[in-house]
Image: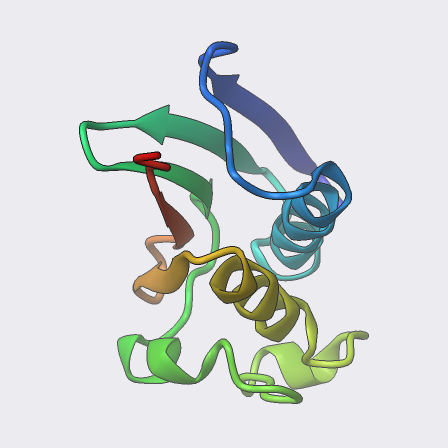
Length: 128
């Protein structure tokens, strides 16, 4: 697909999510970029921590999506007009959001047409 995949992660950061579910999230974010970002783009899966949360993000520098469509990206079976021409079920990002919210986190999408897409999954730090 002509998409470069990168990982940026501090090895000391831990996420409060089962490893199998983390793989589902990472795979769906990467597959979304591979299908829709376009050739010659870079997809970066990153994990970073601040004082209140851990953020897992998948971002690409590809084709992006109209800002008006961003809120709908997590709806089951939703596919933007550009995505309708390619294979896919419209479930990938809906699954991401479901897994993240079940783990106590939240998911949001940022981006614009021609400026790529970033999906941010934020997990609160466990304060036990």
